[in-house]
Length: 129
Image (cartoon, rainbow, N blue to C red; front, top):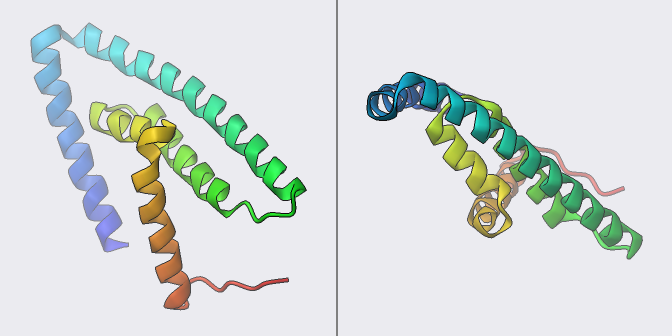
């Protein structure tokens, strides 16, 4: 939890710095327009990717397979969507990385390893029905 707060604080400070830097180069109104544009495009992209992932997960379940990979993809898309609607260029960059399928793969593997570590350390209890 401490790491999360520290990262959130540092990310906020960096975002403000980038706003000021970019605003000095292109102007404040262009920064506002870019923030709104990336938020809208990111939302639409996340929605499209989320629906596509949901359909693939349903097909996987109909075949009798566990949709674990699709669940991890869904988590990445959700986190990416939240970052994309949060104002900031750094959060938008990370959000797009999580939403776009080709750039999502490295994040997906890290999240999968993190969840496995939590299960191994008994921070998450996993039961098979």
